[in-house]
Structure formats: structure tokens, C-alpha cells
Length: 429
Image 1: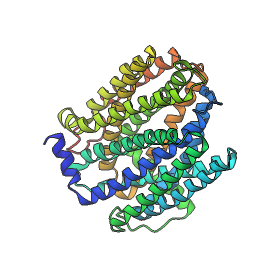
Image 2: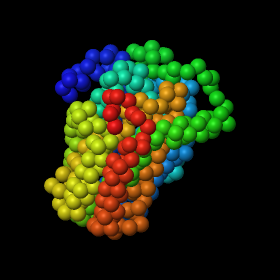
Image 3: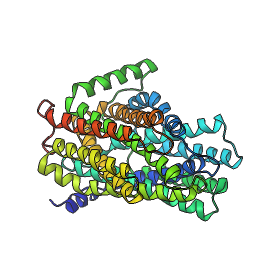
């Protein structure tokens, strides 16, 4: 079946389309929300970002959820996931309105940071719920294509939301007023995303088990059980490891690109031009992710998941590091596209392996754990730049480290393919 035919088959599922619209609506608005935050924190005229400030921002945005994520995963295996999508989006809308109110009052204190953390934590919880719900909307044979299509297009919508947010904020004259407008639009979109979930029956998205809501101690036990399940399922465990390694490299690249574009390729006094160029790099990475969505189902059927994943890791190791080393905008665009296609391809394959091999009664907590691990990997990558790179972003050491790391991951994953637990037929590892 041709790739286009596989995507048409996935889209022929009414339930998949319903879940998909919830995802893309929410992720587009998440792009608006993150654009408002980025312009406020990293691209204001009075702030010159350093590697340390970028690392601090990423740590604040990602690590707190990493603490509560395992508990959220157990809840995804207890609560109706349809209800999680509904009420999670409605609560997120209220939290974003609080951010807008604080921004309009010129607040930049700890209380604003806490509210932002809550909003981002709810977002990660919803994304984990979407991943755990996907197998309930398509057949087993369609799962690879669904994983290629849904998260990838969701990522593209998030990038599109970010780009639209930057344009809207600029058209409104920038500043806090533009950010407040973006936040209010995002809040309305989150409400719409939540209401769209009502088109699906309450029990459609699982979980399949009949387990009752647990105590706090039971949640901790459930997290341990989910960890054991992932560890015992070697193919799934190895897949999560390679995604985490790639996400760590992604963190390094993200920090270096921000520093290069903001502090080296543009005057410090011109953050708007730097922001526009960052948007182009993000667009290139999003385009690469789209290419991965198109080619991954076809190529994995031809050569297998493990060889394909290894090739994608090699691509990032060679092309992305070369692009940053050259340091010109064309080179950064090529490097960003290579990172986008490799990252999305690796994630599509790993998501499918986890979904196929982990039973539904454990799938929510495993995906939440999975999400936590890759978030930590991202922050570790950015933190590494904080202690090794100058403010210019020109750091040969960092490029050598991520190149070796990605190459080693590719070799390790490929050589261990025979020792992993057999994957489903449609993955043929």
C-alpha cells in the first residue's frame, strides 16, 4: 500500500479523526502559548540570553512535570482518557487566562512562573493521554501510519501556532499587549479542544481495565510496576533509550542555535530579526518532521524499524552537527531539517513499539514515564551547553559530544536488534 493510501486508511476511521482534531487544536494553541512565553523571556530587547539563562528556562519549564509525571501516568490508567482530554483542556484554558491577567499587570515574579508551570504540566499530561488513547482509534495494522501521522501533524500545528503567534504579536506592535492577546486566543482554543472530545464516547479511549482509583501509595507502586514492565519489555526499553539520547542531542542543538542566532548572527539590539530567523529554523525542523511522517511507514516495512532508526540517528549525527559547525543561516536550516526528520522518525518508531508491546492497563503510566525521561534528556542537553558553551554558541566540544553520542546510539541500537524481544509483524525489527 502506498504511503498516501496508508494515511487515507487511517483518516477513514471516524474515531481517529475525532481524536486527531482534539490534538491539532490543542497543539496549535500550545504553539501560541509558547510563542508568547518565548518572546517575553528570550527575545525581549532588554535581555541578552546566556547558555545558563536558557538552561534555567528549560529546567523550569520541563523538570517540575518530570517529578509528577509518573503519578499522572497511573491516573491515565485509572481515569477515562476522554474525560482527561475534556477537563484537562478546560482547566488549561483557565490557567492560561491567569497567565494573561498576570502578564497584563506586568507581573514577572514567582507567582507567574508557578502558573506557567501548571499550564505546561497539564499540557504534558494531555499529550501522554493522547498517545495512550491512539490504539483505541485504529486497527493494529494501521498503528505505524497513525503514529507517523498524528503526533507529526500535531507537532507541525504546534510550530504553525508558534509562527502565527509571532506574526500576530508583531502585527499588534509586540510588547505585553501582544502577548496577552496571544494568551487569550490560546485559552479559547483550549476550550474548543476540550469540547471537541465530547464527540467520542466516554469509554472509547480506555483504559480497558476495571481497576479503581488508587491511593497515593498505590500510585507509587503503580509507577514501579510500569517501570518494571518497560524494563522487562526489552524492545520497548531500547526504543525509549534511543529517543532519550536523540532528545538530549536536541536539547544541545536547541540551546546552541538560540545562542548563535541571538548573539552571533544578529546584533544584540535587534531581537526581532533574531526571532524571525529562529522561526525559520523551527519551520525547517517542522518540515523535516513532516517528511518523516510521509516516509517512515513505507521505509520501516521495507527495512525494519531498527535499521531505519539507526540510519536516522546517523543522519542527525552527521548533517545537524555539520550545519551548526558551519554556523550560517542556510547551514542551520539544513541542520534543523535533518534534526526534525530524524527526531520525528525515531519517535514514531519508538511510540509504535511501546504501544504494541505494552498492555493497555500499563500503557498510560509507561507513556507518562516515557515522556518524563525524554523531557529530562532535553534539559540535560541544554544544561550541558550551559556549562560548556560561550554565549556566542560556537562550541566545537558540544558538537563533538553530540556527534559521538548519536553515532554510538546508532551502532548500539543496530547491533542489539537480535537480542531484543520480537516486535510485532508490522514492525519487523
